[in-house]
Image (cartoon, rainbow, N blue to C red):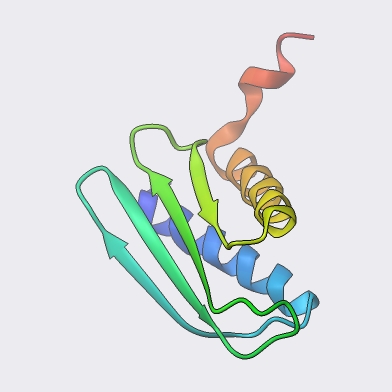
Length: 99
C-alpha cells in the first residue's frame, strides 16, 4: 500500500474518532516532505479548547508516528487508534509471531 493511501486512512480514522468526541475538524492540510508526511487538522471551537492537531507519519518506518494535540490523554488515545490502523494496513505480524 502506498504511503499516500496510508496517510489518508489514518486521517479518516482520526477524524472519525474526533467526531465521536464532538470535536469537529474544519480543515485538513497534508504536507509531503522527503521522508515524512505532516498532517495539520484545524478544529472548530470545542469543549476541549483545542485548535489544531499535528500528525507526523514517517515513510522509512511506517509503524512510527507522532501526534501533537496539547492534551496528553488525547495524544495517547489517538496514538493507539493510529497504531491499530497502521497494523491493519501494513501488517503487524511481527508482534504476533513471538508467541
